[in-house]
Length: 210
Image 1 (spheres, rainbow, N blue to C red):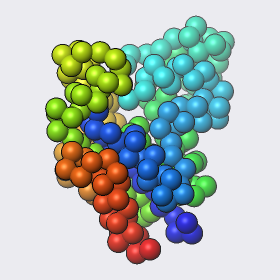
Image 2 (image 1 turned 60 degrees about the vertical axis):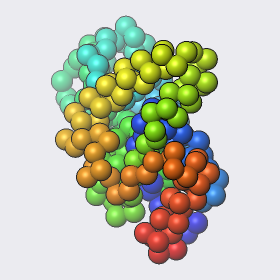
Image 3 (image 1 turned 180 degrees about the horizontal axis):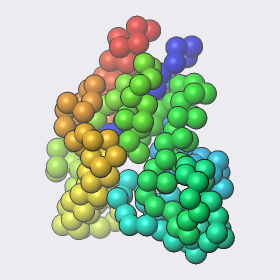
């Protein structure tokens, strides 16, 4: 696709957003970045991907150099001149943000989570979408995916979304899941995953005039 498209997808746990994003990627022929953002950030920064996994969409405390696999006297990736023996969340978020911007500079991309909508907010090619679903569908989907009971799935959703909310609100100064934070909010339970993907594609075509 010639026109640059930067699609940033926020989502509730169990909403089917990853499957929808994959359908959008296939239909629009645009690369999808979910966990791939972590691998890309690790490759570019030289730090282990496990470090980014540990803080992925979570607001954690500082992480020490023994985990990084680098010397405790290492510079902090150039984001400040002070020698540090740890990486804090702000350092990690800055690295991941640079990775997202670098990907976006190369052309069209679909990003899932990681505050990409905020990071790319000044790029006119950016459109942000939030995908939700009825709680019954979300619980069932998570229970099936993780092989757990629905009660456990309910608990998993609650805990995961508390962390995701804290992460997003802290770094974006917006409200995770609030309609005012996004260009489009859609409930995947209404049209199903394929129907939701088709609906979003029509919205994208109208938005980008393609």
